[in-house]
Length: 360
Image (tube, rainbow, N blue to C red; front, side, top):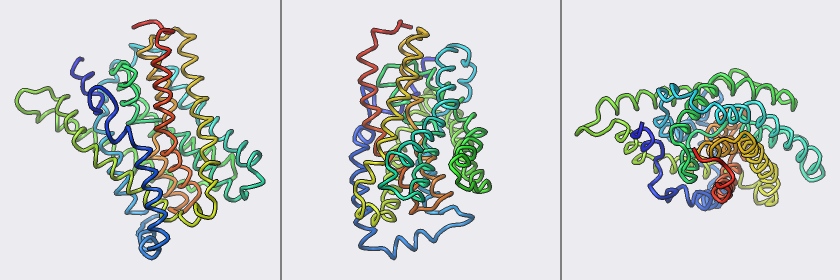
């Protein structure tokens, strides 16, 4: 058990890793670089946009796999044997992730883009932005939650159980929930592309990650714990995952550059419902944990895991469904920009309110 706990987070001991700490800065720089490159070298971006098969852009697909695969190596399905150890925290996050969060996200999207911002955003564009919000809302966090859990000194085994269970649920629930909510907003649902996206960006990386994890554990050297070998492997390849994310951002904003330059206020408008959703969902989950007297080392991770998003999946599916230069893809990338500072603020709040919860 101790080796499992030690291996859960691939962030450096004592705090958030260098790349994660400044992720919002890197994303902002890549947004600027993407816009500049897109305006000065449009032919290259047009060529990259055409490298696709069955509505899947192959360049972005490789980059998404580069992002997702390191996370999936961390998932240990053997941890599911602990699923009944802390049922209250698990119940809160499952309810928030799958029964509340997707529906509040689409509701906020409709309120802001079809009502509050109706005079400044065209209806067709509004539907695209709502679609991007739906994809973010239906994809609970898989990787960064290990970092948030570590920063609140959360129960590492619980976090591992939650991530493993969420990944299993995601395989079966993500496509139907997205299809349902896209239907609510009158967007045609290309089921074949949606199911293909889940297979490409969830199932295949999950299987590859599980196979890698099994191989690493079985081939651990020098008598070292297999879990320690896994932790070292994921720590070593994490920079490649971040680089893949940043290159994807450059590509996306290379296609979106003309939109951003013409409408700089757009990023702010897209961020508004994302901010409301993030703080609102945290309040619901954290408040429920407080009322249910869940210990802090479970309460904090269970609230943070429901607040954070699997933005890598959302970005990939947005591109597959709507295209690289779509409003939906732009929205999912804004989600990346917003998420890190929001989550760090929530980590700080949770740590300040630790005394309100019972100890483990």
